[in-house]
Amino acid sequence: MGNNSAATAHACVRATSIAPRYTDTEETFVDMAQETQTTDQGPRPIVPFLRLHPKPHLVGKKCRCGAIFVDSRAVACAKCGADGQFTETRLSNHGKVYVFSVVHQSFPGIKTPYISAIVDLPEGATVRANLVDVSPEEAEKDPNKVFGMPVEFTTSVAGKDREGHDVIVFSYRPAKA
Ligand SMILES: [Zn+2]
View 1: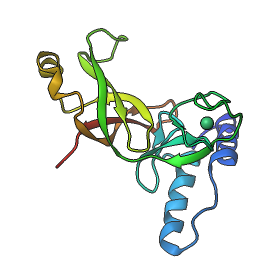
View 2 (view 1 turned 90 degrees about the vertical axis):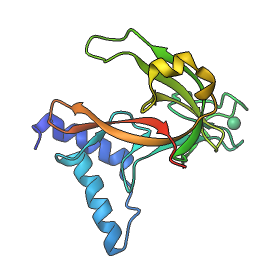
View 3 (view 1 turned 90 degrees about the horizontal axis):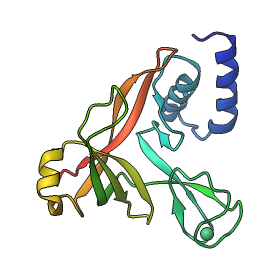
């Protein structure tokens, strides 16, 4: 349980992101899990476009022209220039590696080397994320094995925030056939 200022912050989050979408018994449980996420000790996604319920997935901003953007704070569409016409859309958990780089130096405490990739999603959106379960050394030696690699979305616990909630990050790993 947080202190008063934390409770206020949570109220803001709930007002903007929790919609009463679930009605039947089974999904009421899901809704309660979402409540837990913002009011209690449940896990927290590290970025707002990562959603944990009912199953972890990403959401993008979709313009009325069809273009989809991930992690964009732009007010206007980069493709057609339309202003404020975005709707939220759920993104696929499968994609393909478009490009990648092996990161050898990072912030203190971040284990290197690791692979940073840009993944193409079937919706036409791209997302930057780490690629896990692939050896950075092997990827550097034989990059053509990684370009175009089918990958799937996965999440893990990166640590805890100041209130003790698990912080959830997402990455991609080679897709199981
Ligand atoms: Zn557009």
